[in-house]
Image (cartoon, rainbow, N blue to C red):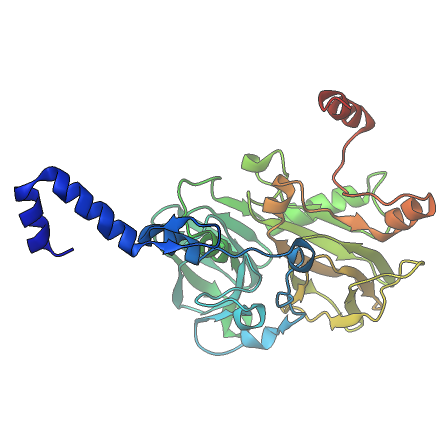
Length: 377
C-alpha cells in the first residue's frame, strides 16, 4: 500500500483504514498444507526452518579434524611475522581462520631488536616461549618479561600485545600462540569482562614441580607431567576457563599407553631426540593397541594435531627424556563435564568385567545414589 493511499484512507475513516490493512496482509499471506495462512513476516521466519529424520541426522557428516603438522622451519628464520596454522579450509569453516573449531594456533617470530604486535578478539590467549628472551606489553595488562620455556596467559585484551625480542638463537625469538577467537566468531559474540588475571608460568617453577613429583609416591612410572592451573579456575584446574595445558614428559625407552578425550589437542614438541613419536587412530584392539595408526614424529619446536576422540599413545625409543606441551580447549569441556578422558587399560578392565560406561566423568557411588533418590528412581 502506497503512502499516498494510506494517507487518504486515514483521513477518510479509521475503520476503513483497518479493513484495508487487513486485506493487504491477507493478500500477502500464503496457504500452508494444513490450511493456515502465513503473513509475509511469518513466511520469512519459516524459510530458514529445516526438519530432519533423527536417525539420518543425529551424527551429521562434517569434515573431520585432520592430522597435520606445523613444522618448526616456519619460525626458525626470516623476518618478524606471525605464521598461522590455518586449517579452516580442511574443516569447512568459512570467513575465519582456525586450527580447530574453537582455537587458533600460530607461531610468532620476532627478530632480535625488533618488535611485533599480535591481536585477537578472544577471552583467552596463551603464549609459550619456544626460543629466546624478551618482553611482551599491552595497554590492558602491562609488561611481562619472558625467556625460553616460560608460558603466560592473557584474558580479554582490547588493544594488541607487542612482543619485543632481546636475545635469541637463530636470530629471533619464537612463541607458540593460541587463542579462542574462533569460538567467539562461531558464537557471534564479543569478549566481555575478563575471567582471570594475566598469569605467568616460569620454566624453573614448572621443572621444579615435575622433579618434586618424580620423587613422590603414587605417580605413574611412565607418565610424569604437570597440569597448568589458574587461581580463577579452581574447580576445573585448567589454564583458563577455556584453555587447558599439560607439560608432559616421556622417559627414555618407554611407551605411554593409549588414551583419548573429546577435545582437540594442539601438541607442541618441546624437546625430543629422533625416535620419539605419537601413534593415533580411531580404534583400539582387545589388547589396547591402536588399529591402523597414523604416526606423527616429534620434532622440537613443531606442532601436530590430535583429532577429538581418537586414541593416541606416545613412544620414546631414544635414550633421552622427551617433552610435549599440548594446549586444548579442554577448560571449556571440563566445565561442561564432557571432556571424557579415558585410559585404555581402564577401559579394557571395565569391558572384561562386562560393563561399558557412558562417561568417564567421575561420579561416586554416594553421589549416584543421591541422584537416583532425587530423580525418584
